[in-house]
Image 1: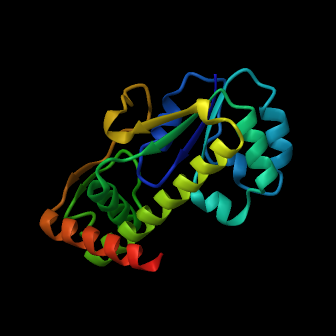
Image 2: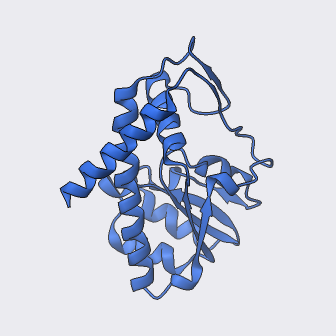
Amino acid sequence: MKILVISGPRTGSTAYCDAQSVDINFCEELMADASRCQRWEEIKSLDSWCFKIMKYHFDHVVPDDLLVDIINNVDVIKILRRKDKVAQAISLAIGNTSDMWFNVTYTDDNAKFDYNEFKNGCHHILKVDEWIDSMITTITANSQSSKLEFVYYEDLDLSQSSIVKNVYNNTIDLDRCNSILKQVMIEIGNEK
């Protein structure tokens, strides 16, 4: 199985890719530098692989022709998102402030919660969701919509992954977080 995962931050994409039974799991390494096109030529002939692409790859390094070639050579394209945007932004805010991303139990002692970082995370996540929507449009425009599968973090079984979901034991005002998310959604709506 040749799997492409298109995702945003804190969606479980690294753990999801890690849990796949494939010959090679590339995650971000495929897109890391200028040799990506050569590596892609080597990878696409393999029987099974899984890697993810995120927005920041496209901001800097992935040419359109490479994307089209990848889309045309995969068996399935998993669009991986989170239903709970507040939980996603909390995870992103804590990760950004603590620089601890996987296999961690967060407490107020090792990761103080920063509401400004949460707001920045909400903005980033919503903008990435817009980018994912544009990727779906690109995939559909290349007559590959039958390859699309929509997957949500909350529905994943990541028990086969070596990467464990983080645990949050921080003091976080969820009402405040929901209010901030709504405010950011209005701001982004006004940007269009």
